[in-house]
Length: 406
Image 1 (tube, rainbow, N blue to C red):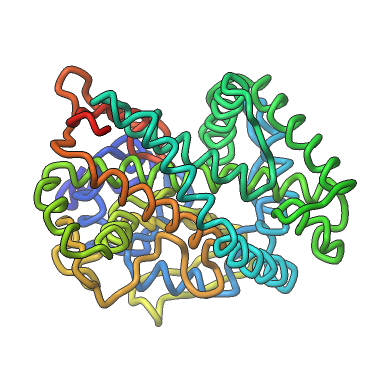
Image 2: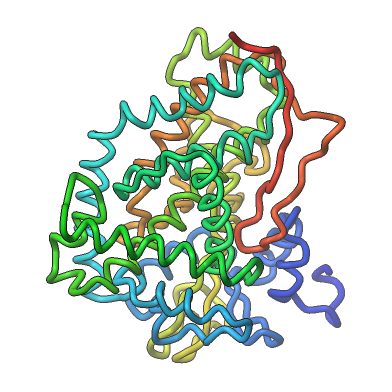
């Protein structure tokens, strides 16, 4: 699908089909129109950095799932319904108050749990390092991100089999929440029931955790359903974000591992630099949806015919914006040197991900441990497997080998 072939216009379907390597299509779309209307799916596809930032900051666009997102035809309405109740998917003053409250508590949690997060990473690393092989996504990144997210929420699962079972349920709900209906609906019912029990328990016996913080703000989270929906949202987003950051981000730099190991000896801050470039190149969510809550004409701000009508869906491709050559020099090359422009992986301005600080702490701690492993490389006998979810992308599995570490 190219610009030259006018009989094959760009489409959202093409971007979904080619999600494993979409960058040629992103380049062509930006060159044609970075705010492009796909007549087939009746939605706008936004691939330019400036355009994505502008729409994120524009109050005429909303992320309100409850009002604009259509009901699922696949039997997953319960999950979408639960998530749509979260104030984090609302707009206006209601969203601002909730987001500010969450940002403050996440910042406090990050400071309080930094040592605990490092311990979780170290324990997982110690379990896997002596073996000389692991699946860096399934065995390492996924288990760490799920453990940390549970700790932030104030949920303990001590039994290993139960932990692994609910980790699997969380993978399913992450797919459903992102609009990719696969898996077993009974898994979702079990996970939501499990979380509901903890929400009720925390109301009776609060602690220093996020569920208790939700209960402590009835003006924002007025009842247990509001607390539950926000708990599901945190579990879903927290697990997916860091799993992809650690797993897929690390996989992208294996070809330069000896160089990075040598530099790490001289530069202890290297994991932080690697983390930001990995976030730019592999955002946990490839695109996010917005809806126009009133007519919005962007034609003067961005030349072209950009008359977005009330109710129309706008897909902001964060992944494409992070590769916009107008803002990122040689964007397809991994370069952990300082880049003057901030990526939009965690959103922009007041529409930024509240859990970004936790994700960074997990990634920094994980990379510090992984950089202790020599000859870390993909396992030629077991190729990496892409995540079939085109909204999230990245690797579902990435087996690696390395020199066993005591």
